[in-house]
Length: 310
Image 1 (cartoon, rainbow, N blue to C red):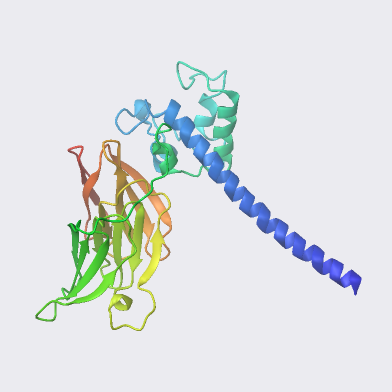
Image 2: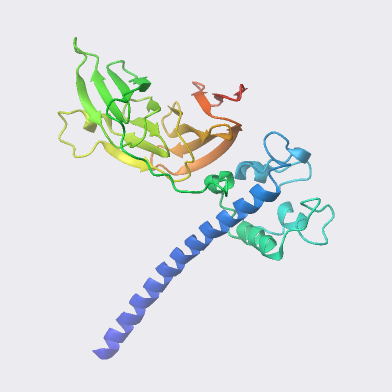
C-alpha cells in the first residue's frame, strides 16, 4: 500500500514539476522580452524606426523585424544563427551594430536568448519611457462629465450603441421612443470607440487600455443571461483605444491604440478568443479612425500626424 502511495506521489510530483517548469519558462520569456525591447529602444530605434528605416530595416514590430531590410531578415524566431541582429551585435562583426558603440555582454546575451526563445514581442515595453513607467491609477468618473464620444449602429439598423462617459447604452430603434434596453458598465475611463460585428452578434467597446466584447442578446434588459460581457482585453494595450472595426467576416477585430505625440498602433485580435494576432506600428501620433475594405484586403488608418496609411 505504501509503495502504491509512493508511486502515486511521484506521478503527482512529476506532473506538478512539469506545470511549474512551463510556468517558469513563460515568466522567463516575458522577462527576456521586456529586456530585449528595452535594448532595442535604447540602441536601435533611432535608426530603424518607421521614419528613418536605415537600410530598409524597421524594428517597430516582429513582422517588420522578420521582414528585415536590404540584407535580409533581422530576426528569425527560434533561430539565432539565421538572425542578422544576433550577428551584427557581436564584438568582431562587420558590419557592426550599433555603429558607434559596443553592447554590453549581458545585453548581447539577452538579445540572443530572446531570439532563441521565439522573439516574443512586447509592444508596451518597446514604447515605455523608462523615466515615466509609473502604473496608471484611474479614479472615479466625475458625475457631471458625460461626453458621448462614440456611436455604432447595428447592421440591421434596429439598435444604436451610444458611449456616454464610461458606460455603453443600447437603444432600441424599432420602438418610437427609442428606449434604452441595456446599460453596459465595465470601463473605468471614457469609452472612445464602439464597433458591431457584421452579423450583429457581438459589440466591442474600447477605453484606456481596455477592450470589452459584449453579447448584444444578453445585453438586452429582458434577457435571462447572467453577464453580457464575453471577454476583456487588457494585455498589450498602451493607451486609449480610439477606433475599432471588425473584419467583414467578423473573425478579426482591428483596434487603434497608442500614445499621443509618440505612437499610433493597430492591434489585430481574434474575435473568437481575444488573442493578439499582430500589431502594426502605423503612425507617430494617435490614430483617429480606421477602416477595413469590404473584401477585407485593405486597412486604412488616419492619425494626428497628418498621415493616412493603407
